[in-house]
Amino acid sequence: MAVEKNLKAILGKLKYSDDAKVLAQISENTKQVHARMAGIKHKLVVMSGKGGVGKSMTTVNLALAFARQGAKVGLLDVDLNGPCVPRMLGLHGQSLTMGPGGAIPPVGPLGVKVASMDFFLEDASPVRWKGPMDVSPVWLGLMEMNVIREFLADVVWGELDYLLVDLPPGAAADKPPVIAGFIPDLAGAIVVTTPSEVASDVVQKSVTYARDMGIKVLGMVENMSEYRCPSCGEVNELFEGNTEALCEMLDLPLLGRIPFDRKLARTFDKGEPLLDETYPTIQRYQEIAGRIKTLLDYKKVLTDKL
Amino acid sequence: MKFVCLNCETYMNFEKVEKPGEDTLGVFFGCPSCNAKFSMVTNPGETQMVSSLGVKLGGRTVAAEPFEMTRGTLKDEATTGAAQMTAYLNEKVQGGQPAAAVTAVTTATPGEKSGSGCPFSAMVAEMGLTSGGRPGNDGAATTEFAWSADAKEKLDRLPSFVKPMVQSSVEAFARKQGYQTITLQVMDDSKSESSNGMTWTPEAQKRLENIPDFIRPMARKEVERAAKERGMATITAQVMDDVKDKFMKFM
Image 1 (tube, rainbow over the protein chains, first blue to last red):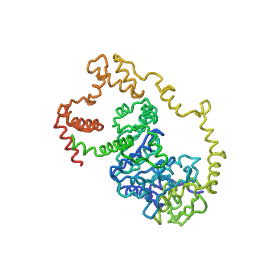
Image 2: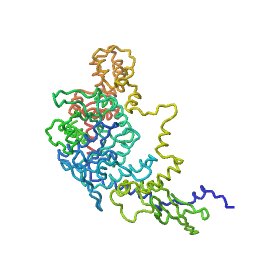
Image 3: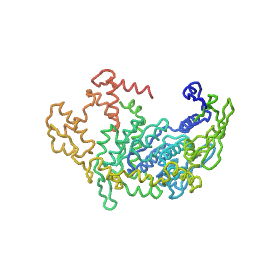
Image 4: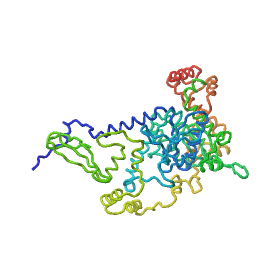
């Protein structure tokens, strides 16, 4: 009969070594993300707790606004399951160029570089992974996080002034704040909401969770503030909420309000974005980009103006 | 993962990885003392998990291709391996039941509604709102104060979850100041009162106004924090100079 062995006693005498080199590779992957993003001055995430508030539209227009100010801009669309940034910028059908040095992103309007899951998908195809994803969401979560890690580690952005990351919707113990936590030296998060009470409530949760994760929330953008009738020109409120009060309560600056603009939205839907900087809604985005720049230079503003 | 040779009481060495079939890995180990060998074979789920970590067991011999895992794991078509995996999991995990069917059973708890209705309505219900988006009650707490009609209207326009906080803050200010009626002016004054109970000299207040309005509240807090650290209750030009110096050091 075999002698009973005391595993605890045996392990106490042994020195562990990672000879399958798993931990070393995970650590190397993290280092690669840092190295790849070292040339980016300001990394910003755009998030919202609620879906459908116009987060991608805001991200794309802020990227274009920074580019109009002469900045070098990158846009990373990490909404893996609903990527729409390439279509909005007329880049649908293009792809990342793979090479030994990494993946070169296609360049969109005003020189904005774009990386998106859309570049891996056929027309109208959803993201489908090999494996037992339908059985266990745990595998799916692990897989998606690693895909996002590859987006951060493998895209050759080069030198950028701003990288804007369009996060998927989600409020609390969900992917968005965790993804933001992946990004080294993140400058902060821009939160998009609509003035509806329901959206505000969910957005409030996402801000609280982001702060718990140590993510600096820079401010809030109110989207769909009002609607201008294309026929009679009358402007009406779409919702009855109060984003200003929400900002006050969360101690956040309201970076600006964007009206629901059917004309502008249509150009992005068609992949032929309106770029005219004199267009009123685009001017609003320009103002918001200016405020974000001021926030990023907060310490300088204080020393200059206080 | 490590294996211990219980005869020799030592860790076995990782030796190599082979792929004996679709969606499975054979990982080989050997005991450095007695030279015993064995191979651990992963099932499809375990293989997937290793792949999802973005690592190669035993380390890489060549650098990773860009988007290696993404490209390698995106499903292009139903593969034999995936079908095998699903069959395996159905058998082992779901007791032979198709995964979707089991999920459907487990989500519908007996005695509860299935939740098949509109998720938006559920959220509205959870928030205690009516279908019109208004709170089930008016969201306001009972009050010892009289509110003027315009002040009440302004309060009522706030989102339901903000309203109690604003009401409580305004009433605390009114109580402190000895007011019995809350007017629009009282609401405005309560907003401008420092949350730290600090007093600002006119000169300091004027300098604060040089800061763009959307970041002024942040600047105000920064200055008040600096004053508090110095044990001061009044914000003077000197405190502001100190804050400015502090920031210049970080430039």
